[in-house]
Image (tube, rainbow, N blue to C red; front, side):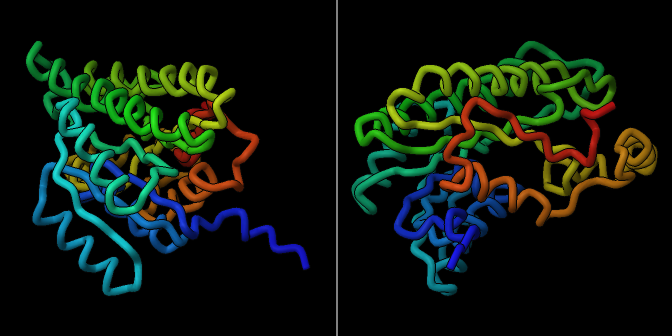
Length: 257
């Protein structure tokens, strides 16, 4: 009997999720674990990671918490080596670690460097190291977290550093996909619209910003936490086996205007 949902399963696969201590990253880790993956949780906030690992283990999943600042190459190398030592392979990388700067109209040079180093350079460090493992094995999937901010201008809603970094993620996704496809490695990205996270909490608390978001979004509302689950599983699994170099906007129609 045909089972189209089987291709969304990740049983026996190992997934690294960066930025997994909160927000989208924590949700991504839960979704991948529910899909059958062994998950390696990476972020700078060790206590939160360990709490999430315990939660997933209590639900029957295999989960490992690893402290990692993605802006340091040696920590990224240690993250991948730890995943290999524990699970023997890396099948999926979800590049999600990121920061933002809230003073959109007066961003300084230090803030710009910090955001780009974390959101873009850190993603490259992770993709490069995990990609080496995947290329050697002849298969693997990278899912980068981009943003609608990397696809269109955002005006007062985001700072230059964030939009530049996320635009870089979009084109890095295309470039790596075109380079690594011949090795059996696929690279795609998710571009979320507005979702409730710790990072976006100030926006959700500002009635003026929320009115602007609702007016700018054809569906008339921000996203719900669960509305990225399907996109993530699709791109991380064999359900998207003929998709690479693609950035999937999950934005309520924001970029359709």
